[in-house]
View 1 (cartoon, rainbow, N blue to C red):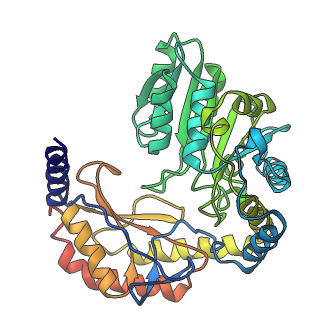
View 2: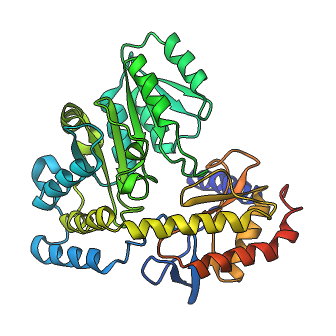
Length: 397
């Protein structure tokens, strides 16, 4: 009976809340930025992936408004039917030229990074093939591997010896190595040079999810450029709703890879295209990423400042030189309580709990942005310092 079905859901939700795992949404009544209005209060936000502060940039807004007047607000169809507009085509050409994972790269845009990763893994691997994935990869890489029907082989985080052994033992027809470039909950970087060496040795694709590296690392070109790499076997996925400040994602790769996605990737073929106004906004955003090096330099300064301030605290940040600075608390309840205590003091820093992170490693995920000031970072550090004595002994809760 339907009532029994509802009751079972309610029991599951109650158990989730009791375990300190319930998720909630907060409604923002202002533009995204270093300061946001939530519930009538201004908060200093360390919760967003708007790493360069472009989500409310005047040039990006102006480009979106101009494109809305010219092209309207909807695409009306999938790219392959009637939804591929001139701004989409120009953006793809500019992204390919900017990211350049290989000399003749092309790019393809998607409505989200999730759809892009599903497209890559299901189009390049299938039954009889094998996908080798870092244990801490983002959920969309894992889901893409599962949907592909290829053998799904996971290796311990960053363990190149384990990956090599698994590649050597595999008899798969085609092999694909998939990795986050910057791991979203820890902020550390994948060993991309070593991964490319293994991809070369075992004739495998190297799929790099650069959601948190594009726009920030490698002079804005991303993690592959940061490592000085280029190869026709590299497939880069970058999201456009984080450092780029807008929405969507792209894949940059060899032309044969891009055409394979156009022809075979269901999450591209059967999805309505993003509005052309977003593509126009992204062109303005990419231009800022390419030309505004001081913006990235300011972010790098804030990262160093925050890490220095955290050295003396019991929940010191993990080994991350990126805008993602996790503070490991331990217990779910303690992480939620620390986040709530910061909120009372005017700081929005989200608590991240299992299954997003391993059990016993609940944390605050501090996201720094070029929109923050040095005073903002000092204020957060002061608040954390004041709360540290209370929460140093609360990690098991």
